[in-house]
Length: 363
Ligand code: C5P
Picture 1 (cartoon, rainbow, N blue to C red):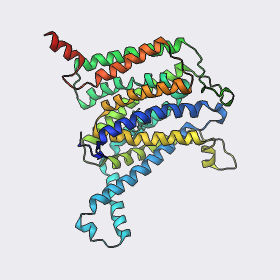
Picture 2 (cartoon, helix red, strand yellow):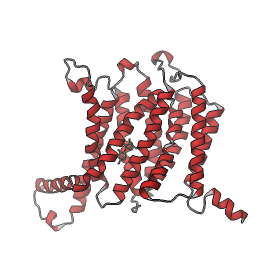
Picture 3 (tube, rainbow, N blue to C red):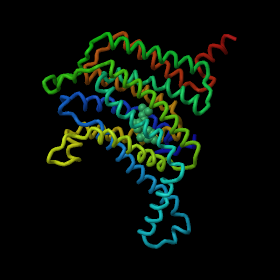
Picture 4 (cartoon, helix red, strand yellow):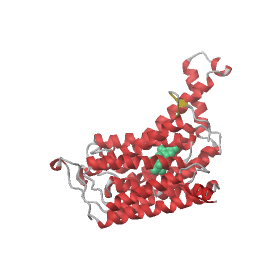
């Protein structure tokens, strides 16, 4: 990976890793709350949230690309020769647009479509599973990411890494079984305010189906994005704009296919009906997460990203106990401990892996 810049003396690589962990935990909680706190007929449209996410992310990435190009160009004699600020801006603007619409921009169309599907599936999953169960099951994306890393990036995984993936699958299985056999249909309510919140009936099977599919899109899209980013010189922010542009098509299609019921307020107002503070918070955290994910993929890789999400599990698990009255069962404790141990094992540097330590000491 490229050399990571630093923020206040701390490498951006690690700052982005910790930020992503907190973002992951916050997203699961806020998104879940935004879906369960209102009855279905008064809840916002997930399709509108997915579209808004891409629009905002694309706009921020475009501004970042302009800023970076302007900073890099400021030393160039051709640029500094331009007197008027408008001419300077036009020069940078056209340069960024040329990069965005470069002949290889179509490569981003594949992860773009996959990410839109994944972002939509996340809404289905989080509406039908308790936050902690969702987070643990979503860890299966480490497995799919590893499989796609081996297949697409031609990386080799050690025995210890494969073993840890096996433990991960077992851990997720334990969590799934205990959550399916406990309270079905599950009722999930914030603590201490029963009369303020609507009992939301969840369908765990639908939730698990959605989260499993999201694991596949996450693994494939993440590894594909890494492949495109690391095999070309194009700037990260330019790639992100391309990603958002291609995402707009699959994000708009479901809205056109199933348009909001028309009222006198107009199409946009109908689309964003019931879009309250929690919906905006969900979109804001998603946008932030998308930008941080891109930085993590650039300066480290998808595997380190998996480590960040396992940290997020611990945070959201503790928050679930406090906020959503989540009950800790032995099945959940054993399953999540297996997942966390497997994640730790997977992230051990070569030579320090538990299995190689055992082999070295015994020989
Ligand atoms: O769960 P996972 O880590 O795969 O989620 C990645 C998230 O980051 C997705 O919501 C995706 O839309 C977003 N992303 C992004 N820009 C990138 C890479 C990912 O917005 N360059």
